[in-house]
Length: 456
Image (cartoon, rainbow, N blue to C red):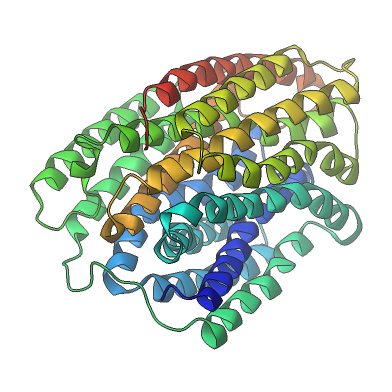
């Protein structure tokens, strides 16, 4: 499977899929204020439009990666694209907020099948000396999606309505399916014939859902109860997996593999610290600064443009320089960018905001590709699907935690009401608290990144 034509087609298909989901996520973020007004949704309810997708993707990602290792990564990948397309169509015709959240849940399931397989297929095809470059291109596709998403999403929302944001991704999904069917031969299933752990998957899903829903219910006691139940379920999941002869997530790969363990921990912290920024900045720029959706998109693209430009360079750099060094420098820049956003208010010049977003984007680019290279280079190829799924889960759980922090601060400072002009001072206070918490998380991430040790 490792001849040149397949390498090019695999990278093209994986990059297109890697572009699709962040494009949608960043586009939807810009459309949220319009959606909130149309469906009369509060700030907490609006956060669930983003969180529902992330939560479903996080719950199904590890099982999808394991199923792909057993039954074929290409098969699971194509199924994920088809589910994703169906869900975006359902989102586009949503009659109310509850329908939209449900469609986003289904969208997350489809996305998990792509997340759990795309990186694993690329890693299967490219040899170690080319892997950093290939993964860098794949990560760059993510950031291109994040870059053009706010701009295109803002334009579509302003001129054609928010429903058009969902409809635009369907042709891309159909093109990916056609390319895979017509141009990509063979299959990758190094764990073929092994048993799938359904019990472990269910326990894992229950634990993660309880934990994340509990975060959104704080400070109410039911939130505390759900979080406690989630922690217990995840503990039971770990106990079960360590005794399973065919675990859905082989926790044994963390034992004695310092690079894998700390690289995944660094990813979890990094995404926990950064994902909520775009959500917050979209609301801030439209509510507090009075920008249109299109103008907001142009400002927000500053961060992912830097990520798209520097991710391939960072990936190539990590083929020659220890990922520990490159990724840690990136985490430090991320912390600096986040801290600079803790002082925002209605008088802050837009140019100052753009500079902060550029620093944040550069930091994230220097972190992400080398960190991915470190994770995938630290395991045997039969575990590529699980390793890819584990890293993707760290990303998604981190993103959900980031939104959980945002939602919790909203609930405690401005409550369950909609964001009206009377609530603007409370919203700005919420942003300051959020950015301070996220900055502190990034500082912790530097230590996790430095602790991974050397790959080579």
